[in-house]
Length: 84
Image (cartoon, rainbow, N blue to C red; front, side, top):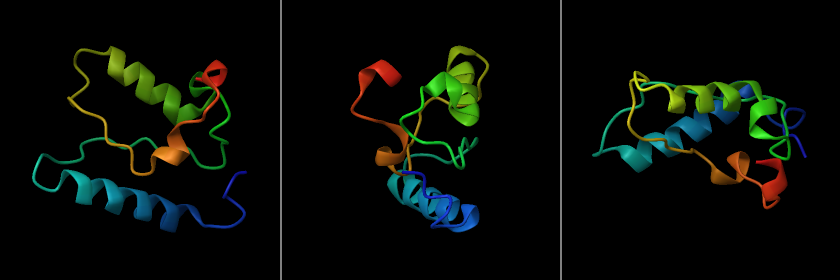
């Protein structure tokens, strides 16, 4: 189920960013953000615009970051490995 009809982008993005910032508070800082709006997590990563950008960035040795923090893992991953 997509939450786009139940929660606005700004509050969802802010909630996830706050969660990520709390997690990394003493370890680093957020330098890039990848946030898909209105795209089910059941969709393959390459078919999600921002997820595809993240995968491309991870493959780039000049990406500018050395770790990935997922603000809400339930939003990123699905149990079906055939979709990821």
